[in-house]
Image 1 (tube, rainbow, N blue to C red):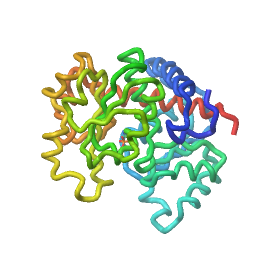
Image 2 (cartoon, rainbow, N blue to C red):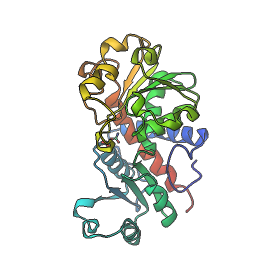
Image 3 (cartoon, helix red, strand yellow):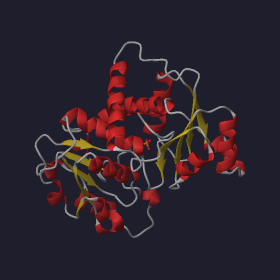
Length: 306
Ligand code: CP
C-alpha cells in the first residue's frame, strides 16, 4: 500500500511502504518470466515519460513497465516539443494533463521539479531523477537486487563509492539502506563529499582499502562530469588511481560481496572492466529488476485514491 498519489523520493517513504513496493515487485518478476508477460491492471490508463535529461535505462524501463501493465505510453521528446519555442514547464505539464495523462514520469536537471508538478497536478507524478536530489526507483531496484542475493538488508555493510555530492542515486540509496537498517559507508574524495553527509547516519571514508573492508555490497557511481565545475578532481587518471574499483581492491571486501553500478558506466574511470563484467557483478541484474520494480510503483500508485 502507498499512501500518497506520487513517488517523489525515498525520504518520504516509510520502511513498510518500501517493503510493500519490493513485495509487489517480486510478484511482477514472476510475471516477467512467463511466456505472456502482459497483465491488465493499467488498461485504459496513460503514462507520459517527460524526460528533460538523457536516459537509457530509466526511460526504457518505465515504458516497458507501463506496456507490461497494459497502459498507453507517450514518450515526450523535449528536443521536438514546444519547450524549444519557449513554453514553460508549467504550461507543458498542464497540456499533458489536459490530454488525459494519468501518470507523469519526470526527469529534470533541477532538484524539486517533481515536487512542483505534484502540487500543480492531481495525477500521479513519479520522480525519475531530479538534479542531485533523488532517484527513488533506482534505490528501490538496488534494494530489490541486494535482497535477492543477501536475503536481508539489516546489518549489511553497503559501500557507496564516488561522486556522492552530485549523485541523486547516492542520496536515494543512503536514505533507503539506512531506513532498512544497513550500515552505509561512502568512499569519496574530500571534494566530492557533501557537507550534510554526517547527519545521515553513515560513515565517510576517503581511502578505498579502509572503506571496502568487509563490505557485503559495493556500489560504485558514475562521475557526474556534466554537473561538476572545474577543480573537483586533478584528473580522471588520478581519480581511477585513488578511487577506481579494481579486482585488487575487491580483495578486502567479503568474498561473496556483490558489485553494483546504476549505469551508465565509465569503464576505466570508476570501475575496471574486469570487475564490471566479473562474477561478482550484478549490474545487468539491476537493470532487469528495474522493470519489475517500476511495474510495482505504477501498479501501487494506480490504487491510491486521487
Ligand atoms: N541509472 C540511470 O538512471 O540510468 P539512465 O540515466 O540510463 O536512466
